[in-house]
Length: 475
Image 1 (tube, rainbow, N blue to C red):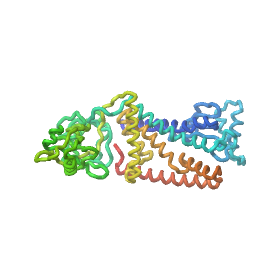
Image 2 (cartoon, rainbow, N blue to C red):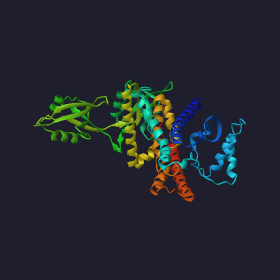
Image 3 (cartoon, rainbow, N blue to C red):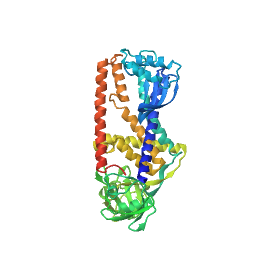
Image 4 (cartoon, helix red, strand yellow):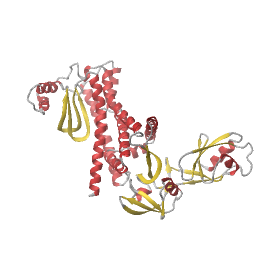
């Protein structure tokens, strides 16, 4: 019964998120179309048969339809052969019969044999190219704005997880040791090898330092206490082991700068430190010069910058003794305490999140495997929603904002049917000095788009199914 209600909550959360994204995206098309004097006949949440009509204002009906996975705006003149349909609708709505379904009469008009395009002044293709392009671009733009605004306001509303690291798990990455032993988002690690842990950084440090060694984890999950045995595997970044370079003895240079035994050197000046040999070479090369050494100290991941000057003559015992070693990982992400920020700090945090999101997207484009691992369809979104639901409102809002930005970028791809495909046709029309595609060319263009979208859908769904069967989705 608990699992059933979790699935119900998960489904409702996903539907609410998708509805918000669709309304924002379609509202962008709608509002710019109206500003450009273009008639909009229908603004619907969902597809298929109408469940109920919210209302009508001007020429526009607002409807909720049966299939809640999406929505649309019907802009007059965008589809071929609309003239008889619109004429029949106007005639039907002119009758004082009080029938809320009178607008369905245009469906009968599809078979009346008329074959005229809607060319009234308020039709889509009656407007210049730049106005049509604005209407189409407004959807992705509004999706982007929604994501950006939500990211920028999280700091002053829900708070953002930048405080103390907790022992509660927010994400279990697929394919990792944590996934193998059955850890889930929402679990709390209360003890390691029988020793209580209350600090997330202490927990991470113990896992990092236990590469290849079994750890007995005591886990609290929904009021139950579970025991899991895990063996941390090498932590990887870009398929390469993560190497930590620790201070064994600081030496005279280290003592002068402020290094302490156990510090981990992350960088010297602008260079990242990836081995003890590299660190010592940089220090020797810097003889007689000032240096900045960035370290993390014991269980803290917060960088500390130490300033000093390397002696001109480096005698015995001057340089620190270093130890480079791989670290262990369970491939789990811990939660952090929420912090509420001022408006300015919240906006800066939102800018950082957006920059990070675009960097990840850039990396995925450059590395096809990352694109394959991160691209997902409705199954992936459903699973991601389940993870967010276990972590509370902040993760749900963050997921919604991320999906909104992703929706904006996807819709701008120059694929027929998508908004980017429409913009491509307008560009071609502009290059051809206003000459539009013929009906046959338009049909061929749309069929190409359908084939591409259909292929993408099959690939993504196949990838989702394979990851589900092989338990490669986040937990």
